[in-house]
Image (cartoon, rainbow, N blue to C red):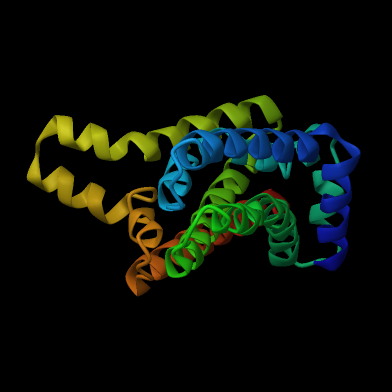
Length: 234
């Protein structure tokens, strides 16, 4: 797993994807910080964290689109699948590499908190729980993107499909409210990935929501391993 992890980290920074991901996130989050907090003289990070949720819909696919699709495109997938490395190690190595880069992005939240501390009192609890919530949400979305990347050999298809699925998950609450059906609303409430983040941004560390995010990440990592296993014996 270590070799896979190091290779993927190296690839992020020998190609444009890693730099594009970080540069776009830093630029957008910095703009949102200025417009929502500095210009408004407020130290509440909750609004910023909630605003950048939509940013992840378009940025996380940049991290995940090539992870497995590029292996198929370059015909190196069979070499990888027939290597003595366990499939779970391959999947986890790629997942952790993407999550590491994601962590470099959200680490900026700490710097933002320090900047806002110069304006006044910062809600430390809400900042910490918001950071945890973003990390959990990111892990879930990265695992979904990784699974989608395993379904195709085209990075573009993987990126577009990931954006579509994640955007649907982002809008699902609004869609259910339009339908106005109690059963659908109840189902959406249970499966909504983005809506669950609201508690974290308010300083609430929910065990149920934490278990949900971890379960989603574990489920899609498992499905990715199973998909690769089928390809190994195909």
